[in-house]
Image (cartoon, rainbow, N blue to C red; front, side):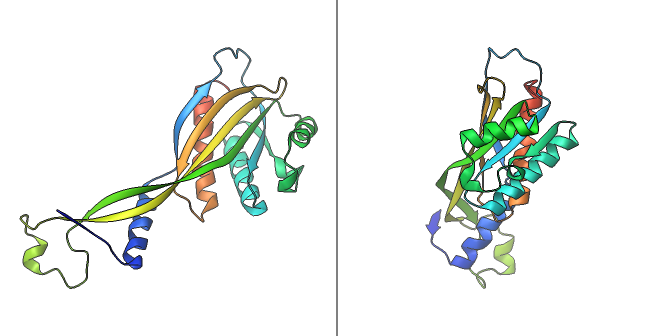
Length: 199
């Protein structure tokens, strides 16, 4: 078996295929074992990002997913419009204004480059004929593909005490489709919080 390098066009096809096949995943979670309070009923959703548009899309999407599951929620950007102002004091003020009893905050903590060996039978156009297409004896070829994974951290804070009661680490392919990423991430977080009886 041999490994080859390949054109940017083929690389783009492989990355697109990998991205389409893999969804956002919630890899690790932690719940405060000492927390014995009732499930939270109103959530302030905070997306920590340098992009005002991405923050709005993320917060609106997660708020929508929460409301669809019967949990009242509000997006922080409606009270803290400037992403540079999302600081502790402003979040505390927003919690009071919204009457929220908890805060869900999510941010990107890093981007990791990974390497994948992708098996292919014929990497170049014109290399295939009818016999080789169906021949089980043809030697395999692998293509080395580097791709990136974004790691995100989500926290649930008790607004009354300010204490973190849940933490989760997620991973996803970086994508321009922020709505899809937000929806998948929101669903994963909400399901975990429901299972942990925090919502």
